[in-house]
Length: 379
Image (tube, rainbow, N blue to C red; front, side):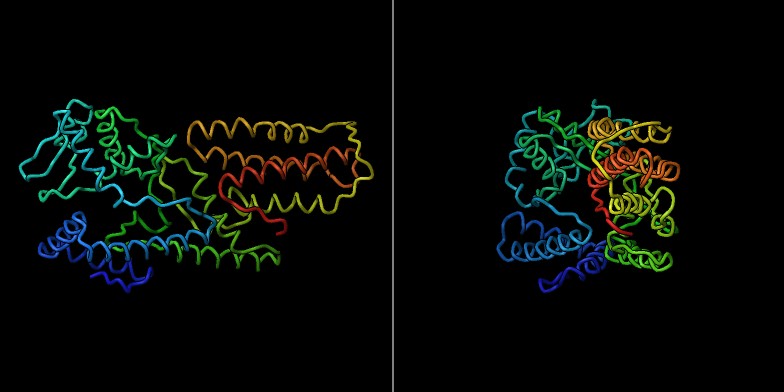
């Protein structure tokens, strides 16, 4: 069993252990249902245990995500929606679509919604046979509440598409707004298949980050260069995932993602650091910008920089960060070609080229910032 004294590191092990026992033993499964029943009926001892475990999990997650620069404004707790869930059931009853099935569960009839072809029985199960609410019921209450606060966007796994359609149809029935959704496929590690939390077939983020950090340190040592290994590792992880469209499986390859060449986070960080290095060395004699003979690579860089606002707008409209990631890489490539063919310092167009380097640095920093990636001044 879970123990109130368990720390965050022990929670996953407990979860996997108990899930395995529940799958084999109906008596243990019933004990779980009994606990849920007590919780929904506000048994003080049960509520206190639940709160302790949830607080431990949330505190551990906040600490872990802060390590990779991810912060949360606030957390919404399922338990907040126990009472409003009952109101949702009352409203669904009035539609004439809510009924009890053979197992004495409250289910929502979703026939004639277009879901029939995807389900053997087009019903949305909302409670257990003992009357305790299932997650979908609380999710309905939660989603209705969120809909009152402005634009509602949710991120779900690809395997949650059918569930979201059921949720959406229930909200349409209630004449409530439904959220915009982005579905992401599974994150696959090279050499591993899909991961399952209940079976313990996971790679913990802490372990994942540690491996990436080790690889980044190796790359820095091999190149005899500078750089914050942690920022490089985090940037590599974020970029390798965000550059891929959400409708494809995200395959993370540690060896490829942390190299300093090609379509990787470290390459983009290196491009920014290179631009910063040029600006540190540049000492223009005056502020006047005179252009005598503009080169093709200068024109290409100006054009690519000018595309930034349109890329951001499209990414926002389509809820697709891969557009920003791919633009960042294309921009870095164009800058690299400019850098090799158009010397900046002491050139005839020095001031103009310095302004181009400044613009590139500004745009790339903003682009990476939108992806949650911190830049490095030196590498």
